[in-house]
Image (cartoon, rainbow, N blue to C red; front, top):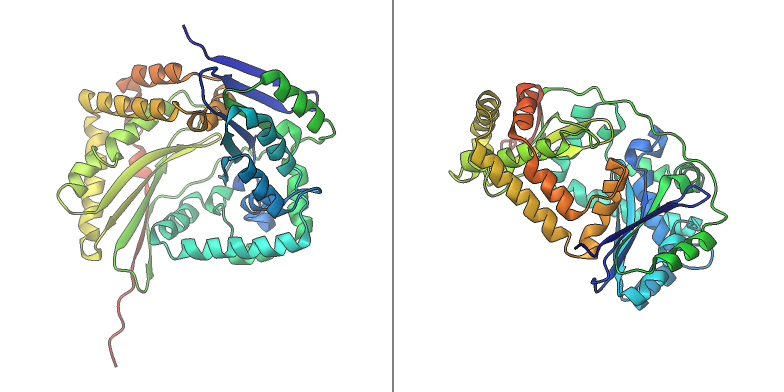
Length: 414
């Protein structure tokens, strides 16, 4: 008999709260999920979602940034945050007796002071982050590739922003975005592990009682995607890099799991069609493919890296493999192997409250209810190969865009 209990309610101000309680857990994980990301930014706000994530660690009216860091450390917390195109997540894990203090701290962070001096300081931190990624060819090829594939849609702009857009994010713009998106009806507080539900609800009711506002609706438009091949050259590179994009399915689409399994059979790092065609024979040092579901649409994305002189052969072999799989389908044993591999990964992540936290939130937001690890594993193991083959029958990889980043030719010595 399962000892897990799902708790769920909505406060009067619209704030949603959900938890997966496990009395046998030795820790508790707490998170705050905001349904906002780079997709929700106006053009002049490019990068503000990620920038605001940084600024929420700089303190509220009663704490400085150093106070926030010291508070996390005093709790013995393992904590972090991340921003994607569609969600921003703040999270931490502590011993159960510190759970309410962690919750109070995470809630306080959602009301940042946005001091001008903190904005100026943190802008430099993010500019360094942008510069760091600019030195990573694998990051650059996906940034440029997404821009080419998604076009003018916000998914083509990237999460971090640019040096120019960051310099345009003053306090007024950051505050305006926060007021528009960090509203209680757009937030989800999530728990996993051993927590005191009644005490947590009382704390949230007291702490967030004066939180108000209604989130601006998300633009539901889908991108008009591109296909074909584009390339850029960059001096100083020693390897060639290629990013692949092709149409997928949205995160609420019932074919999401078959799409994940299909990508796994094609591009898993260790045992997949691309691995055996490219990596095992030594044509490429890296070849992978995955499925990225989003709100209303999705994409298959992939990467290959190799020495420049082998690039054309690598892309030719990769294209031939994708064409073969679309024509022949996926072998039943490869599908079964992908099911077991994905199910194992889900199970391992679900063994700790921290590993389970985001899955609990995503399950509620994407599926309307919290699905337990056994339920999700069962769904994966029951996913039908015929559904994956029906996706292949739409020939998504015929519409792929391949973006290449390669070394610039050396100029002849004078």
